[in-house]
Amino acid sequence: MKFWKKTVWMLIAAVTVAGILLCGVGLALGASRVFYMDRSGVQISRGEYSQISEELDVADFDRVIIYADLANVEVSDADSASLLLSTYDAFMPSYEITNRTLKITQPTQQSWLNMNFSFLAKRSNIKLFLPAEVQLKELEVRSNMGSVKVEGITSEIMTIEADLGDVEARRLTCSGKLSLRLNCGNLTLSNTCTGTLYMSNDLGSLAASGITSGGTEVRNNAGNIDLDGSFSGETTISCDLGSVSLTVAGPLSLCYDLRTDLGNITVDGKGCGTRYINSAAQPDGQVYITNDLGSIRVRTGS
Image 1 (cartoon, one colour):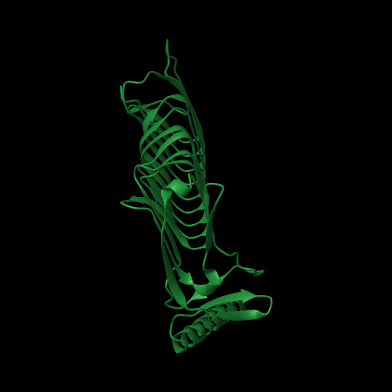
Image 2: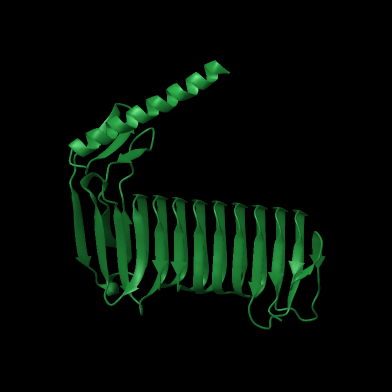
């Protein structure tokens, strides 16, 4: 036992010393350098932090594609169309408009271990602003590491994906399919109208409120699911670990098939055990909810 305690304390001391040394180096370099690790060891990015601001003509494109490797991404409505890029030179995205598509791409780090150490460094940001009246045919946002925010955008198809970071989407109008996928973080959607909706999260909370959807599929591996809105057509919700809460707005007539392996089902405040099935003469849609480990709570709005 003494041996293991001594080993743990030695590891803690080593990590603490290494952290102090790295912080000291960062501060000595002006507290604005970005460190990254590759096959050659720890490298120092000597690029300066800079900003690029560009006015855009919305008549030139009706599709937007954004690929970010290490940056916060924001696409939101504004009075005029513009693009704002702010990051270090080594991570500065490129952008072009071809075939009526605005494509913004950030360089991918060529390292065997994708790890960065920033000492009081500024964050990298990709911000695209579009007038509220603009109607896109497609919006695609993909991010490896960083938060994603999309607000006040209208498009026929929307795809938002992130590996690590929070995703927030608000006031969206999508005539076709809206797809939001997140590997690790919190996923939030609100005040949105869409033809069909797909949401998935591997680790973190998933919440959607004020939603109108003609067909919905929601999945969460580990985390709570909280949905509130008008859901017609077929709605499928599955959760491996966490609680599921569904509030249906409006006088919709829905068929419910609810099942939990370990947890309780509550419908309009009434306990229903681990399985609940109902039927409707002329249903507006069907709701299927499965939860492996956790409770299910449904409020029908009737």
